[in-house]
Image (cartoon, rainbow, N blue to C red; front, top):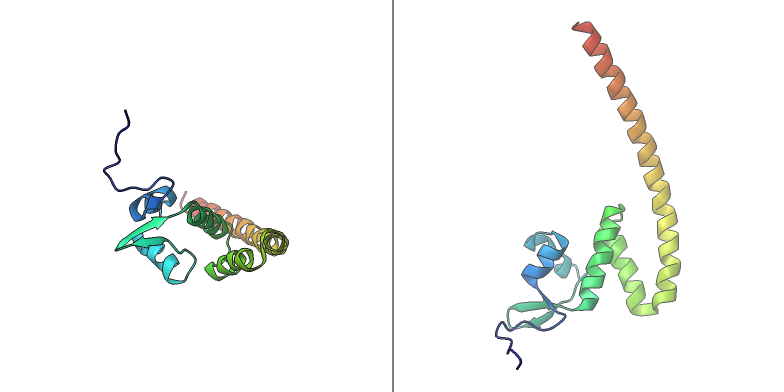
Length: 130
């Protein structure tokens, strides 16, 4: 005996709420990503359904943001896959990653310097109040 699905949910599709929960984003963020055409959920009336393709795209967007890529860079990266396929996307990805690694290395060095300056100033102030 099988149970009939009475929730209206479709297999392998995520609702708007499920998508927000899965990626820990606000509804506003998810709607914005749709507005700028990073995501294109299936729409059934006022209900949005996110396919595995959209989940994969969101995964790439979230990784890109974590690594410091702009939304425009993420959009361009996704567009390359849509227009030229995986090989072209991978070539561009390597170029983007190389560039971003350089940016991150510079930020790391700047943060190390800022930390050293802060620690030195903290020590100086701490000694003056002893």
